[in-house]
Length: 389
Image (cartoon, rainbow, N blue to C red; front, side, top):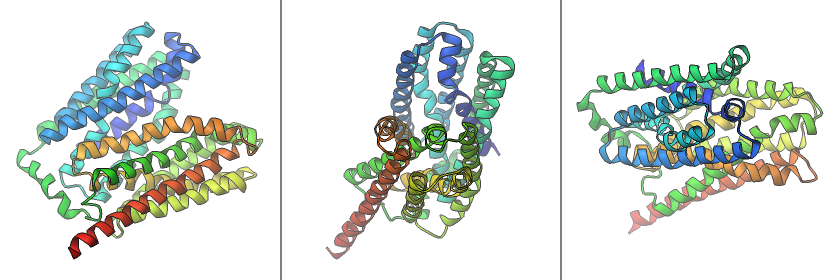
């Protein structure tokens, strides 16, 4: 039970901190709106660089649990600083120096899962646990803030971070060293469709997922503006819509996990993106009221499950180093979030208004899936030529 518990607790920790960080910076540390943007950028850059560095070191030694402990200690130290200080300068330094190593914990857990012989279905199910934590984390965090104040939420993060360190230490202690070689046989169990990918092809896959993540992030971020400005509904419909989507993501991930036993990962990603393109098109041009708005979240949940669950599994299959694979995938989410900002600004100012954001997301989804298909065909052609020669 330790690995699933660890995945859930890490998801719970970040679901408490990340959505509320901007609010905490203003409420507790007196940051201005301009400062919040800069601080969040520093935090995200630190997470991007730190997770890659930690993954690189862990890959060299094929020792992931020990570095999960290091990431957990960094996250705990960050929580202690946030809880105990009132200085914005100290907070910024802590986010820059400790936020990076702390961000490596979740990718390393997925790397450990692959090292232990986990199949694609196991990866998707683990991702479902992470999503489950995000369903309950933000509402509980806002309840704590409303009932007991912002610093109470930091206290909760401190407790969760402590549990993460304890769980990681227990996993490290219980790991059987002879089983560490099972990671060498993972490639025999997983599909080998992309085994011969070169750096150029991997770069194209990473670019494809950055584009796909940007489409998803832009749509989610602009949902409140879309419901109020474009549909003329109350802002509560944005919360209902996002809540329904989040709730549907769990069964969607579990169903996709079953499908990974029958279909290759790239095919599941492609069909999920096709569903996503249909969703964005309907949102941009067909939705006029709350019923269709909520009903379409079935398509959104399927797109998310294919993108996040199967996408992570795909990265682990095409990149031989589990830590690097998981960290690169995680960072496509961060880079996609950065790209989503200009998309919302430009598309939201078009004649379509915030419907234009969904239309732009649909176009980006088509571009992303085209890149995935191109790499698939490219790889098959390379393998066919190699077989002939």
